[in-house]
Image 1 (cartoon, rainbow, N blue to C red):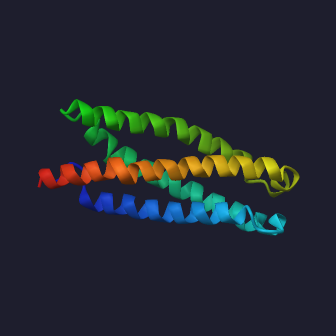
Image 2 (cartoon, rainbow, N blue to C red):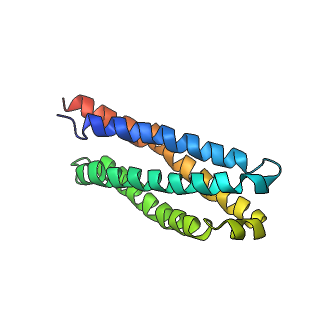
Image 3 (cartoon, one colour):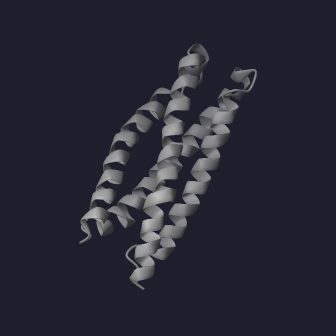
Length: 148
């Protein structure tokens, strides 16, 4: 058996695709004119995205971090600790962002600030996903192959 359940890894990778797609769509809708006509779609998408991100992080917390953080190889446990700490910094920012910007009137009255904050937090989310796809998940795949 692998270090991390292969089925869980498939789900995590699929979740990355879904979150990336949703995030990209939201970011592209920020530049549409008139922006106000997109606010309903954006707030609905943000609610769905928030649920997807929370679901993804819960699965990572359950399937990845507990299994790898105690790994005998210090390089691996250090990398996993770094990822866990990084998400620990991103998640509160993401949650605060979601809490602050699910009000249509607030977005309409503060559209420039909303666009700026949305761009920042969603790009941070995309960066995190890319890092996991390029570094963490390939490491897990390699470990899973070794431990078959």
